[in-house]
Length: 254
Image (spheres, helix red, strand yellow):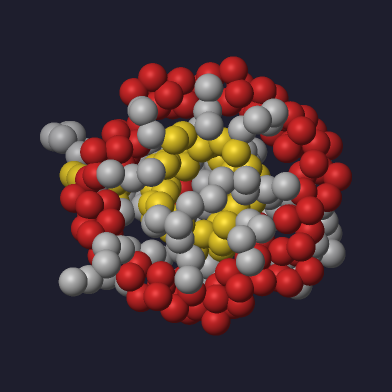
């Protein structure tokens, strides 16, 4: 299992451009995702391959075939196994997974098959944990699977709201697994979250909005439908400066 006494910052990267900015800012690792409005889905072969080519920091890849819940069909499970095979061949350092049962528990068998397929890659159990019925019981299940870390907001919408459970989880883990707070973590609250929880790894996006350079725009047509409103002339990209500021906040104060 990966262990360290120093702080590590993982950036949730929604593109190769965000990966590069995360690296410039001093991040330890990126989690490369597509489908951010859905909570993150598996990125393309091209994204993973080019990210691996351009990064010297750690590259983790989310393995999630769709948005929604974490109860997967046999077909979706086969897709995830294929995606892990692809990530392994490209040279990803880790995968990010999470399968649940219909009763809201960690699916031991499904997750074990994904972990076995990953070989020596690092394993993060993602925020499917925040949908678990009993966080304490499922913490032990995830530890038994041999995962390296759990990404969690403390079963609240934002990590700052989940501080009590996050601290409990860090204490209960007792070095057996890394508890990595995520969701709403930023340069303004990361030091507070670190102090209150005792966590050593943190997950954040650190994005800024970049305006499209399109001159002609047709306001009558939207590619995203009406259920999810997306500004199609704005891109959210990780900011190296925001990453740097977050790392500065984690440094010991004189």
